[in-house]
Amino acid sequence: MKSKTKSSRGRSILAHTVLILLSFMCLFFFYVLIINATRSHADLQKGFSALPGKYFFTNLKNVANDGSFPMFRGILNSLIVSGCSAALCTYFSALTAYGLYAYDFKGKKVAFTFIMAILVMPTQVTAMGFLKLVTNMGMYDSLLPLIIPSIASPAVFYFMYSYLQSSLPISLVEAARIDGSGEFKTFNHIVLPIMKPAIAVQAIFTFVGSWNNYFVPALIIQSKNKMTVPILIATLRGADYMNFDMGKIYMMITVAIVPIIIIYLLLSKYIIAGVTLGGVKE
Amino acid sequence: MKKKKKSIDYGKWGYIFILPFFVTYIIFSLIPLIDTVRYSFFEYYRSGIKEVGPNFIGMANYVSLLHSDMLKYGANTLILWMIGFIPQIVIALVLAVWFTDVRLKIRGQQFFKVVIYLPNLIMASAFALLFFTMFSTNGPINSILMSIGILKKPIDFLGSVFGTRSLIGFMNFLMWFGNTTIMLMAAIMGIGQDVFEASDLDGCNSIQRFFYITLPLIRPILAYTLITSIIGGLQMFDVPQILTNGQGNPNRTSMTLIMFLNSHLKSKNYGMAGALSVYLFVVSAILCFFVYRMTNDNDPDGSKKAAKKRAKAERRKR
Image (tube, rainbow over all chains, first blue to last red; front, top):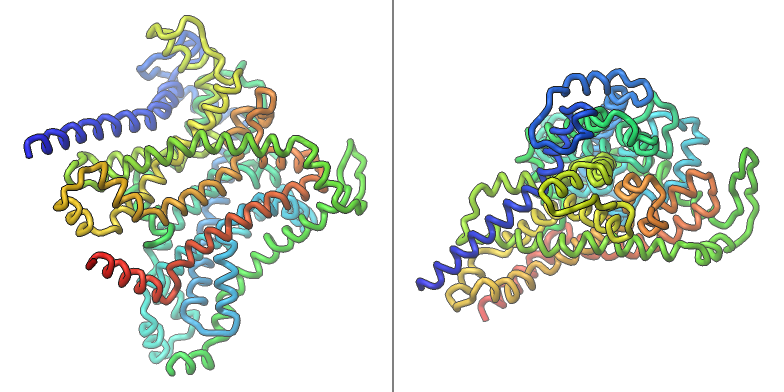
């Protein structure tokens, strides 16, 4: 008995050590990033220092005033694209899920099977045709083709569908009908409020996914004032930037990353709970 | 009975509600897919300002892709994926077991979970740019290693094949191990404490418990994680693209399939891009089929799940 408690003590120490090491690894890079964003170019050339410098606002001002990499314009564009995508994606996924969950109609099974079959299909395989289509529709170099396709998001649909199964009794819908509520009204005023937790989680994930998306925007967007943050980052990498003001470079990366970190820290409880809900349930 | 009646009254609303999804999907995914397949049989590219084609050339694009470096890029993608995935699944399994072990009493569990999941949400392109600056010859990593005396002169991480591939693998590991840990944790917590308690009474130690109970019981989720990770690996793009500026340096050893596709799209070689997409589509479709089989295992009405539970209970009785 004694040896058992001893070995579990050893395991506990090992577990905590490994966890602390891994956490250090995860946080270290962001720590260096933020420290370096507060230092001047001359300081950075002298080597790394663990303490922050005093150039935070100078660097931030330099980033804001840089005409060739309009970072704040990029953030605005990214906010528009991610915000609209999250809203459209969650609303229409919930609507589709409700349509397939609450109604019986011919082809319902086919529709469901079809969505499940394309659940994890990579968007990249249709990129070539997508690029041609967008060009033909006259939407090349605009933000719209980054937003509209999010209406059809199979993975979000699946999440919503699973959620409906577990939390919306059909009898509730029937009761609303007896009270004379129209079908759209039932969805908007009864079903949507019930789905709020699912919508919140998926809105966050869609927002983040769209914020970080690089492949599709890089194909569609050409002009500087329409670029989203990831494209600006890529342009920065493409420029011969090792000769630039390094304090400013670090500040640009900080500005690209920090908004998401703040959102995450505020909502981490829901986000972590939401990760598993979308996966296979056992 | 009730269901029958409902279908007569309200069926059309089902169509109306699912219409936006399908219209959007058909316009923005299905038509592009058909177009992609169609153009893959054409010679269609731009050289300078002159557009060549589209001229029908049959399977020529497919054949010339097989003779190009495509297979090499496929191998690169696989290698980069494995460098990230193997440590990811091992660490995630260990952490998930630790987190769910009541006897270990991990302190600050919520904190650790929040921290290890954090890299998953970071913009991959910005993260790659950060790594590029940090691991450059005069970047902070070399500066730290030299100041504590481990190194005499800076290492050119991105100049070597090993360095570049390791960095990409490491970043993928860092971005995904937290996510996998949380998925596996949920799976282990779904097993039910009674099984663990029973094994404890039978004198199972923690290693036996892991190999004979935990691992077999979470196999479905492990398989799911593996397949979805392969699909994710196939799409690997942001990290190597930004880290190597789209070149796949050194000597294109870190060029992935999607980077190859991107370079064809950027140079407006639509025929070749189409054929490459079709290859990718076929592989993805096979993988999608596996995911479909797995996710549909717990069917909508839950009868299979109930059957499974019954079987499980019976096994337990024995």
